[in-house]
Length: 470
Image (tube, rainbow, N blue to C red; front, side):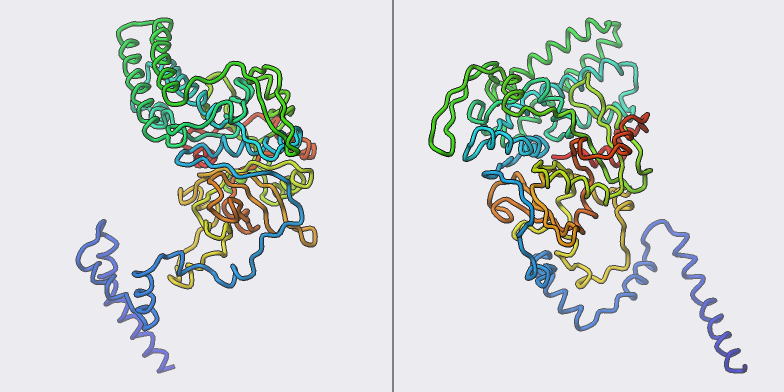
């Protein structure tokens, strides 16, 4: 009893001593000298820590953190794989959503025409995407002419301007409006593969024009006069696009060689006719499924004013449990249909090996971090964002469970396994945010979600930002 009393007195005395110091820290808003001293005194480095400092300051972090045991057990074998030919390369552009969309359709044409390889023209879609985006910004400015320039929604639209990124739904809208052409009919140019400077030139014209439209509105111009000026701006944008891309074809004849060496020449096509005949599927049969923890599952969400074409619907997505999403992806691949998906390619990805896994880098062994975030927290605190779209072409199934997934990237054959990646199931859980699935693979209760009145989310919602990829 006496010993316990002594311990109690010592603890109380200690708390009395440190309390004023802690109170002082809690009242301060910045890092002052006493607090800095406290931080420095808290640092206790072991011999092992000093060795780690030497290693970290002289080497690439990912080289040190690479999990060799994991890599040693890795293989790129898949029990089910969709056949495709070649690998595409978006180069220095943010057109992954277009490349991935066209890579979903590519195997259909390769099989139908017995080809060695085939690519659609990515530039053709990108040309009209930029023209439509310019029109969207200008039309939005007209329709919000009475808002303050610092209005949050207007600011978001102006800040985005005309850039490379996009959504699956934008891809569908462009294809259904403008059609498709083979790459050899409308090939890449230097600016189409290196878009930064071209985008800057276009945006300067669009935003300068937007400023004039707002000034005209303040001076009393009506919408008809504002749209007449919008047309003048769009003519300038069209000219800039043609100078960078060349003018897109209205009609073309496709001459091709099949894998048996036979040469064919088609009739004259419009791009829309070619899309309907060569592809022959309805893109509107494909729907967006997202994994958005923190929002209610089995609900339909609509992302307001997330459009490239002004007069189309906003993107809509059904929010589902991740295990359900995996089942639908597996069904699609087993039926030889590739799956477009959006993800955070920056996290836990090794370009050299082509491995996507939450276990590929062991940062914990180096830093022993005290704090962790789950997927919901990563989303809402903007630590993780969808920044890339790719295509799933295969799955490795053991005991009826998907172990890993074959991924087709669009950054050439130098990365991964000649341009292909292996996505492990843990990475699917952690960093995949959206898949596009044909409705025929969904049960009735999931299809009915798309009949719901959607929950509207603004432009600045984390998932609205997450789903746009470059």
